[in-house]
Image (cartoon, rainbow, N blue to C red):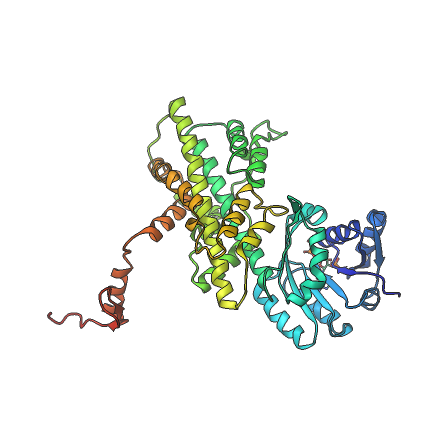
Length: 473
Ligand code: ATR
């Protein structure tokens, strides 16, 4: 077979197929391969007219179709399948060739694979791809890791197929080895938090203000014209205004209230625990999904006493709605700040140089968390690339200063009413913890020293101290 393809994609399930089509539509010759050849044939039959594809039946044919250095993208299930496919293709490649994993791999696997393949002279590039099927086809947000050398060859292609915002591609070299998959993982964690916060806002507007889903959809549409402008707010309005055809009831009332997850939120939280990064809003969002599925436990709690209910006047409901917008915005800012800090912690731990402003920039389009807000984050880093926190930016700091009183009122109201707001509360507690002059951590240190002689440091002197507890003086 003549080598004419600039890139090859193996694994032609929905994401792989759509990425292959996206490359072809952008003028690249794309070799396509799948373990089961029927999928390859189907792609050629259904979409062959969209560009130049080279269908390969065997691994050898596939590799032979690629121009050198070869760019071979694998789009199979994360985990053992990815390892199996790497092992199938790596022996057929030559030094300088590249294996690109565009699946949802755990970044630690990507680091391991990158190291192993580097020893064999093969570049391994873990690429986070966000935007689902639609994004893969029409322009995703793309977060590649791997060596800078690999990005020189692959980057222009990824930038070409990515989403564009203000004419700029939503793809950039995030950092070396597993940095791309890491950032994609945190993206998903932030997405969990964003969705949970929106859910809590909805629940408050429904239960406290007494609005119908249709009215709340209208409120979200209004919010979407302001600083909360985002894909998730937009689709929330769509979901809330949707009516179930079979029953005529609001769609949201006929859906079982047990949230699923594929596990990237859990990975974020597990990794955060290892790094010591307090991503409390992301963690609460992940736990909230888990709790929603605990049906026996929920049945055991159901009927236990809750808060006090009272009706709001129309004026109060309107005022409360404005407060919820403030609370949602402030909590979202904290959730993002936590995710950003986690990326910084990981960069330190794994030796990555990550440009956080560039991450904000490539999340402005293509991905699920795309939002006007991300342009603000990009601008904040452009003004000061060394920001420790988003709240070190004067603009964000003044917004949170304005939001904090209504934010507290919303959470207090939720507590009085008995409406659960785990992510709102976690975000506010985080804010209060970090701005506190003194934390009860001093007491924790005293307890640790008491029962375990763990020692403590003092505020007034250098060194490490132990008190002889139980002895006078
Ligand atoms: P979906 O659920 O949308 O079908 P998926 O399960 O995440 O997608 O990915 C399935 C892809 O991984 C398929 O292309 C599959 O190949 P088949 O069509 O032959 O099933 C591929 N895949 C999974 N395990 C594989 C393995 N061990 N070797 C090669 N390809 C594999």
